[in-house]
Length: 108
Image 1 (cartoon, rainbow, N blue to C red):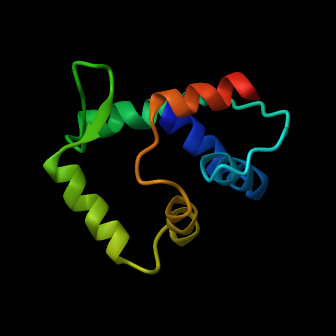
Image 2: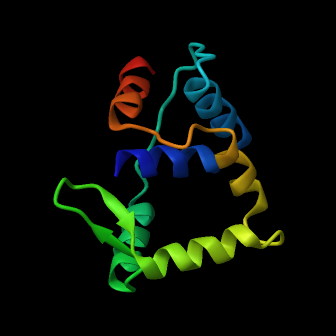
């Protein structure tokens, strides 16, 4: 859940995208981060679960269902949808661990 909150926070501004991209690409700089956990992100996850697009796993992680994977593939294939968000996510490692997010939150 924290990984999602960090990414959503980063997506809200160019500065946030730059800072998070630098962090995960090992170009760490002291920025004085204040990452806010937005309640609308939690509500969006709850709606995705209710719609059958995502599921909560026993280890408290969240993953896409088959239906969610199909929707994500559709969104990724379109060039006119969420392009800035897709460009930003492409700058990040394919796997962001809880440890790396904890390190970011502890360091900031």
